[in-house]
Length: 365
Image (cartoon, rainbow, N blue to C red; front, side):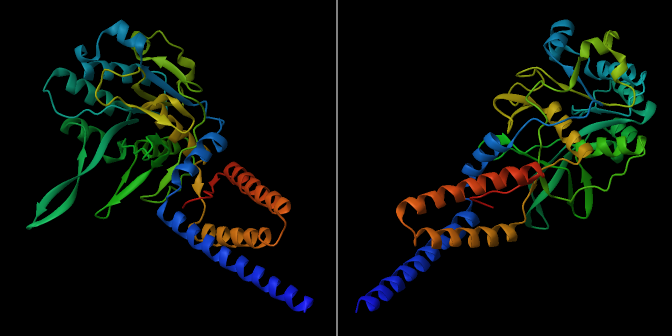
């Protein structure tokens, strides 16, 4: 009788374990497939995984900073194309590999400065210019369709640069307002478009006989930020480049990025080119510095890749079911220890994989 009761209780405990495991598994599938807990993964990634990394010394930023605006005046008062032409020519005197200009030059003004910028870009064929890609609703043959539109440089400048010297600068923050990912290239209607960072690195690789095999089309890569905003890269004020009063030793064979480096920049006060990032939720990073991080990731092949989705599903389900099955058959103290041990294991696994440039989200996909 006692043996029969023992076996009956054991069978009930086994069934409860199986049932509980099944319920939790179904809940896991629901949360992972619907991203219900995506915010928790973001918090873990930003606060525990993200760290400062090594960076390339051959990336230099020429910043339109507070000193520049104080010296030259409000950005709206500039003869912009003339000044950018002068800056490009001055930088090119010291033989950089590539100059990337993170500014849109749309709309011809038919002024002398238009031609000055064209001549500066044509001079050494090492200048990459910014474009923006967007989609608009249009009626094509009576059908509403999403049609891609590209904001390119004005005609003469576009012809001088050519497609191989253009790259899109579009960025896309996550729902929590944090910029975590970069799209390096995209294909639309069979035509491939490179991002600003990828186009710059391709030209740098060609100039320095480096191999570049490229990244997957239309894929987003987690940016491995090398440091906090305004830390790491050498920054030269734009005004000093114009006056030729800057350290020229860092320019030769380097990548030089020109862009806005002042908070609430005067270029677009309603939508300034600065973003919150995983490495700093309190201070925004300037767009040109984000491009520097992207180029640095390409240079060092250090983007963080998401773990394979199928492997995540299989591992998470097996792991959680095994843990639940064990803890439901132990006393409270031991089951608590096992549960905390499992959480610690997942956390340590995440750190190990992150250090191998793989992001393993534990609660979502």
